[in-house]
Image (cartoon, rainbow, N blue to C red; front, side, top):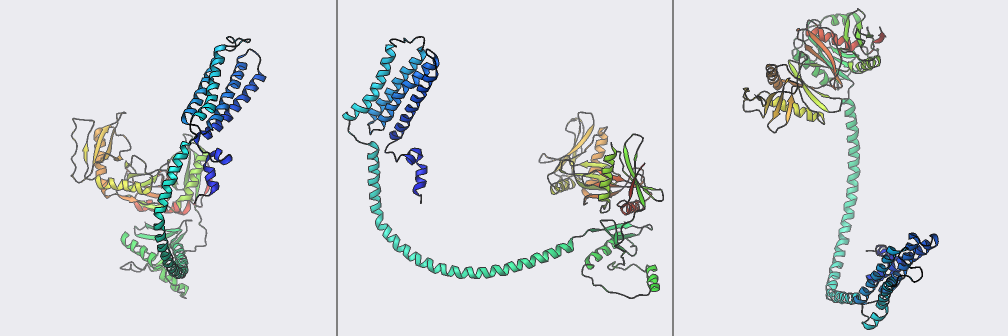
Length: 568
């Protein structure tokens, strides 16, 4: 229900300050009257502030002359006049304004200061006469009837008749309302009982939620780990595993080598599955017997379910037997290398930096990521998902020799979108045909009919040959990322992508990971790649076997976090 003060606020300034108007002309008359008073005041002010015979003095005369017509018209149209009287008043104000405009156009040069201009004065007088006639004579010759009042009376009579007709219906409605009230009272009683039961249930549910939250927190604390399992080959070529803390310490390791990588993985999974709930059994064993047991590797268990676990002293801080050397090369670029105490260089920056500070920042980033970095095996090719400098996710197909065979060509908003993009390439690249859209005479390669994409080989503006993989929906889902010197080279690259992409795994890595690969000279190397794609460090030299490269990575992970830095 609208309150009185709200209605007044919505009725306008006139209704709030003066009263409810009976007609619209009553409000208009008030504002015209006030406007005429304002014009008169401004005209008098200009008259007092200007000199004789100037245009400004003429404007003052004009404003003062407009004041009487507007004041008279404001007073006249507030009367309950017929439409004829109101129209006559507006006609009078129009004639007066015409006379004043005429006066402004000829003043001061065309205006006689002694007699004035008779025609202008006559027109102005006619306007005042018409306004006066509308306010005095016309009301005497017409009936004092308010058209608005008649309309309001008609509406009121109709509303009264409608109210009388609905009076009987209201009585019946009141009886039904009384019955409804009784039913509502009974429902409220039942609702109150239900509320009490709901309150009790809510208390029990809150207690259950607290218990569930505590259980989830306990489970999360058990799931969180600051260490990772590493699967590697020892010096004798046997697969082993170890659990390394992110600070570089080895927390646990397999006490023996396994005949295959699958056996080593089974042993690793057995430890992860059984270690959480295992109890503690203290065995008092003489030192000599313990040493004898440690020297005897024993046969490998058939299911590799319970491998021996060596637990080193976790309280000991990681000690490094290597030193980082920071130096400027012959091209005046700054580099770093990790040199072991035996004199061997076990790792270097892989690239030069423009300043010493940039090299130091790269070295600090290497220290932060090297201990917790995973091993990524590329065999023979794998997809890498990374985040570029613009914060977008991309993928690339990397061969084990380090060459990039393909990339996404565009960035994705999330890692999941990038994974969907590489999955599309993986499912369509193998059976995709090859077309030459810019070379009408060239013969392409037909697909197997199952692929929803086609390779396109074309020559770019720089004269280099490139390829792209276009989906049937028109989207480019992969491209070469680089140009080739000839069409045949681009075609060979398409063949390699078709061969490797369908079976390539998508590497999952944290903030950084070690990549172990075989280069063009059939030597094994490693590099530490950040998830944004940048190479933080590499081996600097090739190794005769993959196991040697793995051992080199192990030495870097063990020695780099605590290594000192010296400048050469």
